[in-house]
Length: 154
Image (cartoon, rainbow, N blue to C red; front, side, top):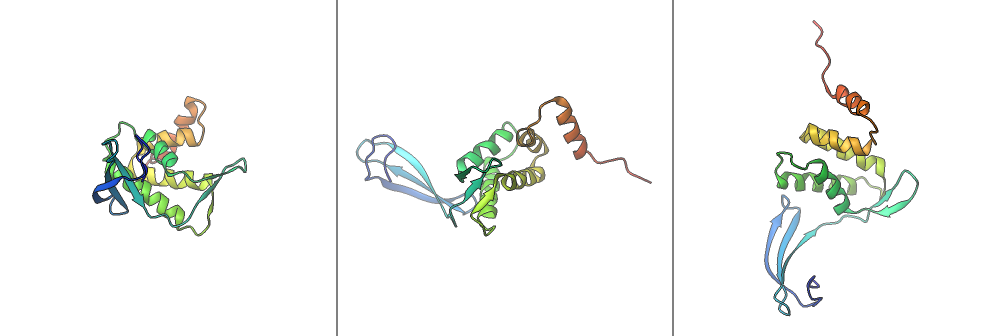
């Protein structure tokens, strides 16, 4: 593994341990050339996924992009970071096990929304506001009113 500080290719693993509910390995590394320390994560990748955008454009699936958008939606929410990592790993595993390497961005968005709805309603609404491209307060109001249970009939 190349050192991110000096570029040396001869780095040493000092510590390895399971991470993200045993779906990744966290490795602490040391560079003997510059003394730098850094962490890497090793994950199983079942297949290379390609995201098909609504415009038809295709791009390689980027786990960090997915993670960034989910973490933005969950910012300042009382959810354990380990739980967020597990959720992201679960979404990626679900995408990889779909059987097709080409995945429409709409499918990814729906899976993320479904998962967020089960974990945290505020994060779900935040993500939906970007995913569904809310333009006005009325869009929020309509979306949130659909979340509220209707009056109970007797």
